[in-house]
Length: 157
Image 1 (cartoon, rainbow, N blue to C red):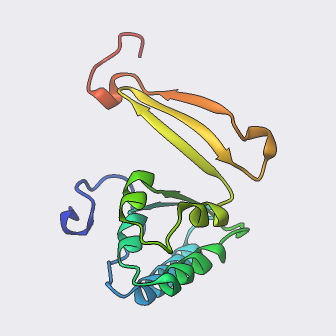
Image 2: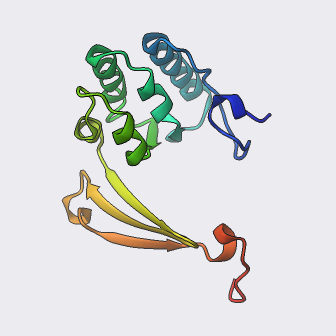
C-alpha cells in the first residue's frame, strides 16, 4: 500500500509496523513506544529499527517540553540490546524548520553514533562524527553502488 499522504511515496522493504501520524507529539510518542514494544515481543532480536521521517514529528513540536519529551523517550532505548535503531534525519530540513529551542546538537547528544552522509550520483561518502568507539571518529568511507542509484548499468557488476 502506498502511503503518499504520510510522507513516503514508495512502498518498499519489509515494514513490520507503520505508525500513524498524530498531531499531538505526546500521543505520537506513546504510539511509537507501544509499537516498538509490540514488535520486539514478536521478532528475533537484536532487531534493526530503521526510522524514517523523524523530521515530520519534529515539525509538530509546539515547545521545548515536547522536544525534550521526545528526546527522553528516544534516550530510553540507548543500551537496549534487543534493538539497534538507525534514525535517518535530513539535517538541512531540521535546521530550516528549527525554532530557537530546537538544536541539532541536542539530537546528537542522545545519539550513540552520528554519521554525516554526502551523496553523489552512484553512492555516498559517510563520515563518522560521533561514536562510542573513539577509533572510528573522523573515519570516512565511500559506498558506491554503481549504476543502481543512477539507473545506469556498470559492466563490472
